[in-house]
Length: 249
Length: 108
Image (tube, rainbow over all chains, first blue to last red; front, side, top):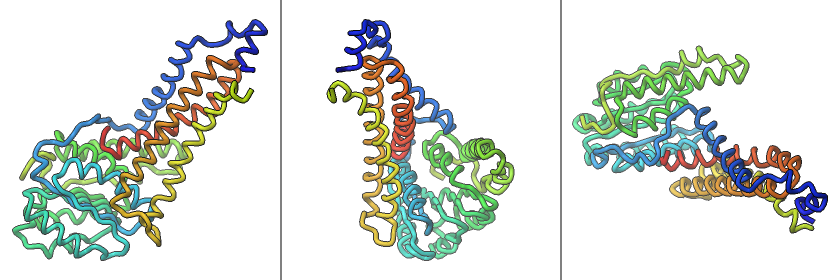
């Protein structure tokens, strides 16, 4: 016998059962509330179906992930690929299994991209790296088309001037043993959406990364040092701070 | 008897379904980037987004239906206990996986 029928037989059912309308409201509103709570906790805007900023046909991108755990390689690709696919005319994504893995393919793809598109962005999603040496081998005339380079590598902020000297218009890197994925999450989503300059994106990314570090410090009861993490991770910009995704230098 | 209590089983299935993304989140990277890759890298994205999205949608739907049925058919004490024990954790995980899938689709 159903619970409700049982209660009704006892003469209690009608009074304690919830009305269908109220039950429906609770059942729909609770998950919606939980989703909104999640968005607040994540601390980033949402951009429903924002599409691609203008000039997509004029730009291409390359991304490379180094030899880390399968989970990190998987999650980096899962996050990065749709943004590159949606907001660049063409993109190449490499996942390395050793230090010089995909070197020839990377250089060949970059040369192809630089020959075919006026603007090419690079996403170097790797621990302390020297991809700058790979790119040196590309003819100078082609290198001038490198527009923006983002490097997640620890201690790779110092490569900023090297990348500008190679021909890049702008470079963002991190100074120390950084927790750059926190910054990269905001950078990729906001920069590729267009409408904001690199300096605005940099400021937003650093601010929101700092907020995440503060939350971590709070949740870990101070075991995580937010100030130290920020000191090591704060991203710096070299080159054209006014560059926007839709610009063609 | 079983039929009349069937709606009580829906809430645990909503929660159980959320183990699928968690399990595949562990397995998929191994299938693609492990020592013996068996899943092509270019299929990774579609495969991953699909198994994030489907259990999330099922978890949300089943949780909502279970909550509605329990609130309208069962004793309030039982209904609220089941909702707090099963539906709320299922919803929390489902909205997380749903949002992740939407981010990985670049839709939000």
